[in-house]
Image (cartoon, rainbow, N blue to C red; front, side, top):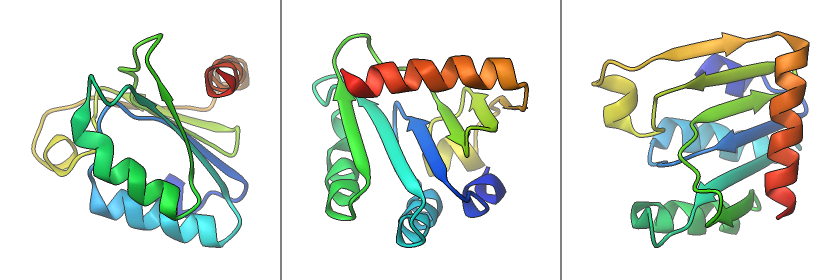
Length: 126
């Protein structure tokens, strides 16, 4: 996952239910300084209040954030350069990444990637 994020050339789009991993945050911040577009969708803070500080940090670093109350965001996925889709059960937190038994899949099928891209675009526009 970090390899994909570090090597993004154009865009990173993320659905995040929970986000508190410092390594990922530093990569996203670094990519934003390289003019890579970074957009993130989070669930309503009333449902996942633990994201509040992270969302504020992202906004302060000019990362585009959208908070949705409907549909409820429970997805965990990363779309890189509209070519690579990283999807799984992993919350973007140290315990989920480093300690839990989670599932991660990397999908490069253009049709599937385009479907997710269009879904993300529609949700981000809400």
